[in-house]
Amino acid sequence: MNDNTNIRITILLFQIWYNNIVILNVYLFMAEQYIDKENLEIIRERLWAISNEKEITLEDIQDRTGFSYSQVYRIVRGTNNMSVSGLIAVCKALEIQPTEILNFKIKIPKHLPLRRDRKP
Image (cartoon, rainbow, N blue to C red; front, top):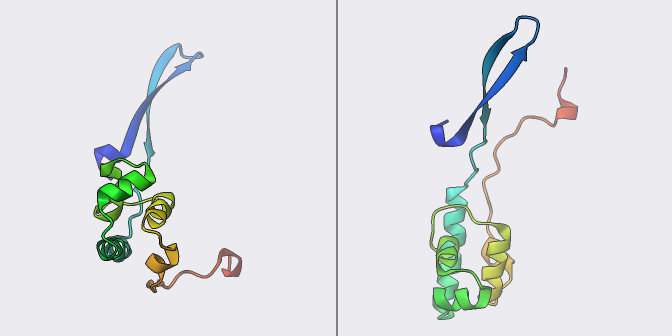
């Protein structure tokens, strides 16, 4: 965890019986955002291929979604995470169903048993 993902909060506690001030440092850790880069790359490749096939530019997608150019670029060509709503908006702009983009298999990891099935 780096300095950008935690927040340092200082709390002053007053201990009346000792008439002292105690400073307590509490660290709250924010979970890092989950990004599935492998599958996002598949989705982006499909979006880009369809937009090229239909000759729909990123500017056209911008006009059809109301997103800024940088938002459209981040969804279609970027490397960061995208929202489901953003993906659906781009699918509408490309005049396709989301199933055309999401029709692929993902690797399912082996998980622990469900909590109810675990022995105490």
